[in-house]
Image 1 (cartoon, rainbow, N blue to C red):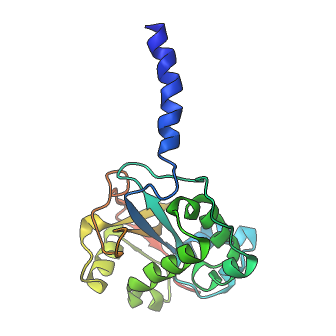
Image 2 (cartoon, one colour):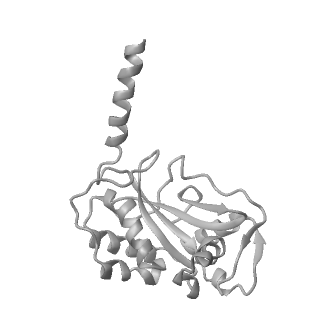
Length: 209
């Protein structure tokens, strides 16, 4: 019994490493962050330049995803992006620093060159229509988080409930995460560990300042 247990300790790390091979994943998760919420909870305390802009739904990242779990910090032969490459993503991500972090943690696992990964991230972001109603709010409101999901589905006819999830943090609507196919960025059903929605019925939604 002890030999079997020790053997398992050797095998399990190898299996975990196999999950983190660059290019080995099943689908994408497009994460859109509601910038006013991030700024209120974290960004303003950091003095983040993003919080001085009028970003609404910003691109948090495009994440390679397994059916269960996700790869991160993969070894990759791809060259790192330049400062100019990451700075060029600030218009939709808020900062070049976030673009670098997303490349380092997620982009390496895509198996793509950094320029191609950022180009695909931008294409995925632009493919999704962000409901204009949220940008027109003039004051904070409380509402069920499901309202945000429904608004995205109405604005994007190809979307369906199991392809999109809304997350909350500290009582705020935090992010919308949309699951997309690898080949053509079409909506697809999220894996069981992504599909869980925020269940708050009075989530706080802050306006763009």
